[in-house]
Image (cartoon, rainbow, N blue to C red):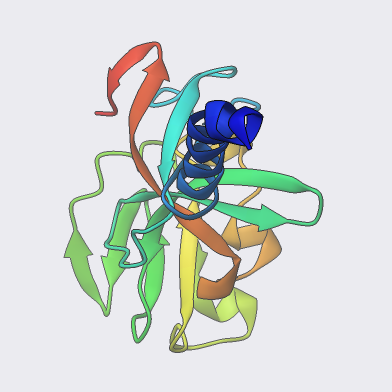
Length: 160
């Protein structure tokens, strides 16, 4: 009984860390250059697993097979998405997209959908010409998204 009493604080600390990492925050390492110039290969981010509301231009992490991909939300449920001459149009309205430089023309209809269905998102890497994103893999289900990130722990600081 005395041994259990002496190790109980350590057990509580370990369980707390496991619970926080599983349900609240966890580190994610950027792999590749698809989010350059915003994020660099090897950068370590803090993923907010509790945040399940995603807005345009949020950075999200989702599972695709055996890998985790880091991309930017561009299209939300109920919207149409089109890039024309490097300009983003959502529901046929021009949207300022500071990450769109050199983006090839694209229409959501290329994915055989007219409108993003409820529970799905259109995501893209910031390095638009070198990114495996929704233009290739299709729309991302909300169930696939693990959370969003806006903070890097290596290098330390908020993501611009």
